[in-house]
Length: 269
Image 1 (tube, helix red, strand yellow):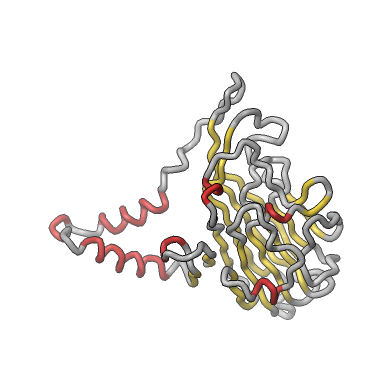
Image 2 (cartoon, one colour):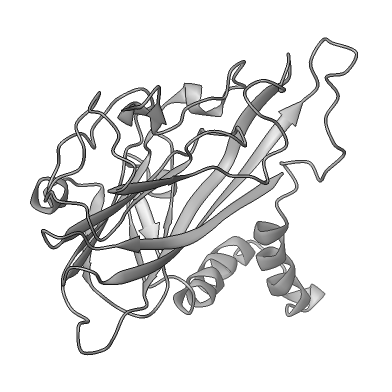
């Protein structure tokens, strides 16, 4: 299943703003995204357990998710993929500053509590780039085995009970620049739900999460352009060389990741 949240985040009065994304918040009444407004007064992210102030930060739920906290019953769910893309949409005169992209691959921790852009910029799993009108995409890559397991209570929002629960935040984007600058964002979740024990705990019939059409399309494109007699012992090496060329036009930067045998970090387009 796919769910999307679109909106605006604004640099606050102190010249800093942020967007927090909760990869494991799969309820349609949970706080899946938190984004600052023009009145946000701080240069750091909120502290874990601090009171949520509605006028300073807007929180959004993924309304396209199929179930709420009161209706998911005994169903089980897991996040298959999550990401966000961001771009500057303000005036060219005010364009400037920095964008930071970071993720927290350790579920259940709160590494985004009370952090400024330099704190997060010193982490290995972060990237800082100039403000641009081009879309920049961050894909969440979990770093713990339990991230792939089914959750009996998939409620991991950023704000719970009127306070910040930052252990639910897996992606952080910080904007530094002219107060009032706006950034458009689009966050997306792909999730898998399986039926529960109850008679009414069925799930909609959707494409299986293991149907990797995007990945298979890359292989199919390569195979379709390779004559049958060309297949041989070096076909895998040829495919890897082709994949590098294929990806250059889409991925402008890559940091770490399981494919490189390192701690899962992030990628952005």
